[in-house]
Length: 267
Image 1 (cartoon, rainbow, N blue to C red):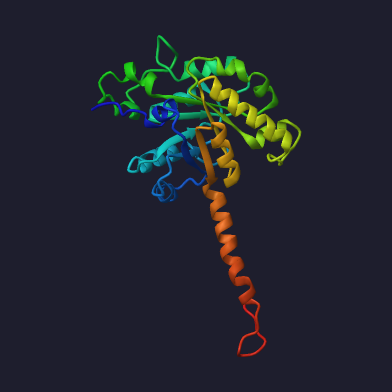
Image 2: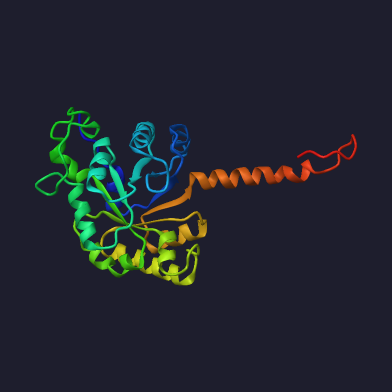
């Protein structure tokens, strides 16, 4: 049994834009529905959702039947937790709130086996319980590490973070960044967008893959034109919220119209 090639990491290295969808729902049925749509990647969020390790395992098992590639966001850049995610077989890891090059270097260490890192050895799911010969010798090259910059401090340290060897991509978090810059809830503010645009260009020029999330179609296209390589263009929960609201709105008017049987209304 061979260790699968990380096609998502390979695509980023080849500068091929990857279009993704953010997954907040924890059930594997919703994952299967979204994976069937054909996105290049799906982000399974462990930071702002109830997704725990067992949920992540179910997501990985479900998406394996489809062409979409999994990216999993840990709730925090903890070495022990990263080890558990990697042992599950997570090929692409997104770590939030990375503010300094020291943090970035520690994350690289956590994702690599010795002598290049400190990842603990185990015959876990990632190695198919030891059925992949030489897994520990090959794994470092296949793990894709993405760090998330989303504060004023992170942006001030961006060049130093980009200089850290072993970082494959840098994801910009618009919501937290807008809050850190003094524009809470307004990621579209001109000052925030200026920082984002500058960051995308600098990340790309440094040879790393820039990434971002936005449900705004025009903004997604704009970021891709600037050089963003992995862009999440929507969220499953937001699609459900908007879709249900729009569906109901089509019938609210009908439900309050008088019927042929009198003045009774529905609703």
